[in-house]
Image (cartoon, rainbow, N blue to C red; front, side, top):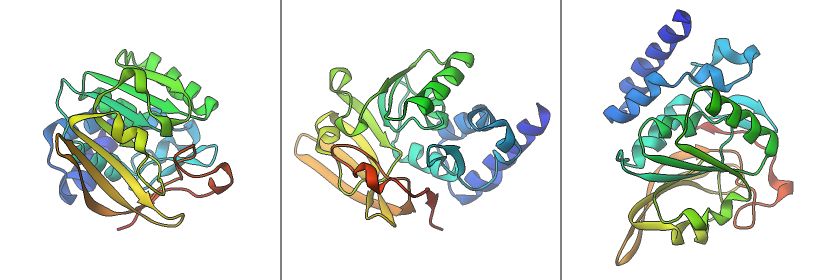
Length: 225
């Protein structure tokens, strides 16, 4: 629909380009992927607003700027194989799929994954493979990955994800306590890993063996400006 196309263009211009997102591949993907298809019909009119939106199960679809920012931070190439921890609505997965060769995405909540998978199939995203599992373990049999993105906050960087990152790979993850985190980028080289801090943020919690326990999963995510 034209109304959504216009809203998406406005989102890219004002929320992304005006705030420093420069990667042409990321901007192309954000212009192409219809964010309104990844939320409920009741929220579609708000799909291109500068904020996260609820998707059920105490989870959110991330703010468009944060999706673009994290994607740009991964420094993606078209040949890359990417692991996503936290499929959620599937929006971030679709943005990645427009840029890279293959996306592997893990979601622990079955209902969310089923909804996202339905949208992927309807939009013919054949380069997104999904799995219902504890994402903190990663997806070892498909590793190593050129890039890994974690769309939920962890108290520490899960060791399995570092192990599954290819040499030369990049990992972007929110790390911190239960109320606020720092978005970090990990680079892996032959010499080891380097970690840099990118910005402050608040995300839903990464639940799993190497994340938070089930009882801690009670907050919603947004970007701290």
